[in-house]
Image (tube, rainbow, N blue to C red):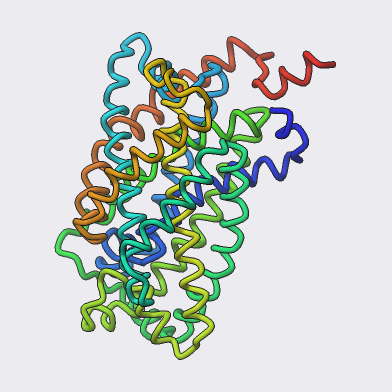
Length: 391
């Protein structure tokens, strides 16, 4: 909290926004696998559906942040008990979803690293050790480090991604223009892309614990929460729209080349620009790390002070223990392959997220937050209260 007070309001807003961007811009996103499976394979609707998904996600997460800080929640379990009160036991829906998503998301990070680093001649085992070590170091140092690391990585990722996406779009601009102008739809069910908006927002909601913990240490009020999610929408929507637009133009090429697992790598290596290919590899590594950090930290935050870990004396040691346990299981999940993880793992967790997160926060959450604001107009969030007490 003392360190957080020295951060400017703009820095705090960006830090929280970057946590969501860091989680979203993960292995599935950076490889292009996620965009192809949820948007691109259906044709011209891809950019529109991507924007709608980001609106749905950021509006939902904004309600979660507000409730977390209004109710002075200590972890995500407290948040979902508040959401479902007086039926607190329904919180178990989130627990099931979250444990599955954390393991699957970290598994995707490791699988993505292995798939790409193998193309660079790096052994799979060494890739796993490298990613695991970086994730472990960032996770054990806490929420401020997580948000700061996510902020730095987000800037680098945005620059690298813009370079890759704009280069890829310029090469296939005629193809993209034809697809969009003719409204070429490649799916069998016109409603499927619309349904996937909710599925996508559902599994991306896994960032709630990390986002909530960071907001508690950085944000001062509801207005800043709204600003943080508005900024995060812009960051995420731009990156996602550019990604799906680029991949629309290259879809026939990488599909024919049987490169559906790593389509963005195919684009980067066939762009005719060596620097673009290098920038992609840098961006990918940072995307993998950012997702791993923000995802793991949320679960670590939940268990680092659990009574059953009392035999471990220091907080950092407990964080390291929980993080290591998560990564061991995630390595086993990664053996199923990135495409299977994105399609089935994210997909089924997304459906669960619709009913345990998206719908509840946009109905019950909105109602309770508005009621709380009306009944407690002078309520201060923790960071503001700490400063007032010192004065």
